[in-house]
Image (cartoon, rainbow, N blue to C red; front, side, top):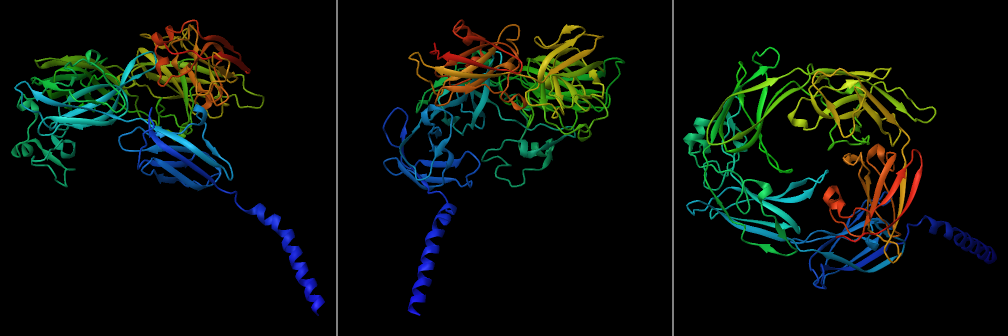
Amino acid sequence: MTKMKSIFFSAILVISTLASPGLSALQAPEPATVQGTVVQTGTAIPIPRARVILTPSTTGVDGTIFTVTTDDEGHFTLPNIPPGSYRLLATHDGFVTATYAPSKSNAGLALTPKQSLKNVVLSMMATGSISGRVKNSLGEPVGNVTVQAQKLVYQPGGKRGLNLVLTARTDDLGDYRLYYLEPGQYLVSVTPSAGPIPGQNGEIRTDSLTTIPGSPLAGKANLGRTITASDLAALGIVSAASTDEFFSSEYFPGTSDPSMAAPIDLRSGASFDNADFIVTGARQVGIRGHVVNGITAEPVQDVSVVLIPKIAGNAPASTVSATVSDSGAFEFRGVAPGPYELIATLGDLPTLRATRGATTGGAFLANGSIFLASLPAAPGIRTPARSRVVAKSAIDVGSKDLTNITLSLGLGYDISGKITVEGLPNGSIEKPEGIAIQLIPEEEALKTVPLAAYVDSNGLFTITGVAPGRYTINVSNANKWPMGSYVKSVQFENVDAITPQLVIPNDPRGRLEIVIGANPGKLSVSVVNPNMGPTAGATVVLIPDIPLRQHYDLYQTATTDATGHASIAGTGFMSGSIVPGDYTAYAFESLTDDAWWDPAFLQKYDGLGKKVHINSGATQTLDLTTIPLR
């Protein structure tokens, strides 16, 4: 009996020993650890109480976000991290968010099992501030006015634009302070607060008013209601037009023209404390006119008329709507001096329409003017009963009322056309039936926007309501085409129509011929420094040669990895592919903004780039040497 027990226990021991390797294989990989320090940029000064965040950057990790706060010496430890790819960043009030980038590349932080990553340094750049005081011509403080910090940015074509970064409001002493600003160049402007503006029914929405402590509406919980102008006046609230206390928007150091403004060069941790304004009152005026049918000259009903200030860059503009009578008459009251666009609109757009800012899942059909958007099939787009017709007029408001303005709405022309597809793989669908084609005006919001036309089984279409002007061609519902589809050619009235853009003349007679190519090229780049070592983090820029230099949708960039390699990739369907043609490639050792949009910037490096021809269906390789910035 004793012997039997011994055999039994021995058997159990053997089975357990044999099973253990299998159990180990099922266990999760051993975790990793990350240790490091958060310091101020350019110094060894630690930043206590900084928030360090480790967030997954790829699938395969359970999605857990790990956070920790640095100690008094700026040190942090993140233990028990599952292996995978992550983004490591640090935040702290008064500093620009810092992201850890191994070897100066854009690659994520890859953690392996049992890895102990030490001596990680996150360098944080201190933000700055801009402050000042706003007074009137009598030296009195002006409270409750809006002050904006707008950052200079580059846009396609070398245009310098403005992006609104931060807004503040002056207090009872006229003081303001814009803080937590990243280093850079800023234009600072002061804008009067919006007064009560009646809608088309004569009522005013109270939540659109700016209220300050002490005003009759301040602190009210029911501001989201309508009220009449007489009720507001009974509360002591009137428009600036009634008091002549209004002033025009101004840019520091005292100009209404943003091109004459003095940029404030804000350095890391700096405070610019004397951005003061002295505002001068200006009389507000009225604008009156009529909207008529451009063919019959009769009044137009059910029309919308709006007034939009001309503001440089991307700063938001306050659109004001007019009350339009059944006779087509409109009127604006209390308009401040300055340049404006007066726009009358009749008709609707499709419920879904592609724009360059909203092409989710879509693509640019490059080579100039055509881009794709991943919209639902044709039946999913609500087609309005009439195309949108828009009339506009540029006006300059001075000290006198503007009267007898006539906005004439035209009906537009019909444009017929045909679209064909070349280079599709064998077995692919080549019929473009169901494709939607629409012409988008150069200034989309300010001109006629015709309805989309749907292509039949023969590739034919007709676009209605087209006004003379410059257009981009929008092609949607093209998801059945392969990735990398591009515009091979566009002709209108037997003339090239994409160099640089489609131009519709008065009384057009020809047909729009669109040819889509489906066999693009690719480019693989290796970048070295002057010492022939691989360069990580270099900016590779691919610029089309003349005559396509103005086609900014062909401009492409990429950042080299830790080995100095990069693949040029497009957008959406253009991902990983390039429109065939001639290009010049540059590799800049350090380029933090989009300065390459500026032709003047590229001119400084003329002759330093390398020519490359992208062939259809082929992958080109190119060796580049980094170019120091001048």
